[in-house]
Length: 334
Image (cartoon, rainbow, N blue to C red; front, side, top):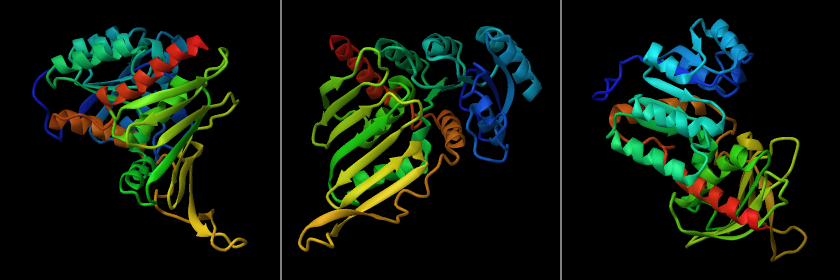
């Protein structure tokens, strides 16, 4: 499995560690011609990949996966690797297993690793993985599945911000529910991608009851806008980001399903004053997940074949991981 990058017509053997929703069940009753919501359907859609098996400690998951894909499933990931010699391993297990399983794959020279977020349970674990990947000198590539980086609307939001399409951005507001690591980490990753990845910031305050999984906090970026991240305890998913700029406000709501543009206009009741008014816009495309999973997989393969970093890599995920760790420390003080 080691060696020089393969030519583009190479077919890669793909295996999945963890056989739950993001691995394949999100698409269990989803039309196969629709954009993938899981790793497995993305593999089916990619002409360079073939699913050869999976692993899970859960017998029911193994049986269901074997029935659906007509390939073997094993109790443990290492047995799966020994028996199947995959080129790509998707790590779709619970987050507490991500570090150990990724470390095993890197040490065993798996060519490509498609790692669900968060990539590790601590910043020190993530740094260990970054160092292991670096030592491999390109034998392995890891893509962290912050798949919103591959959605059209979030890519275009970065362009709106950096090109100041609506003027200078003065403030960013993020809202999330259902857990800092589960949903909040997606938005932190998008926030840092907007800022260029490693722009210095200050954590101004943290507020959350100890029983909550959704802390709220304020950030101040050096030579950039302030940001408030509002974590809310809700029985449904709420994942939104809004940029308030000199000439208007643009928002990606409902996890990317809704785009909203509000432009600065003269107030109809108070001449000489201005307000925001909702306007139709194609600035960020039509919204929706699109083929983001397929795009992530393509980026992983391209990065391996061309010897470069994927757009969502272990190093690019470090800023979000560091902030999560900082928030945990501050949270304990409250």
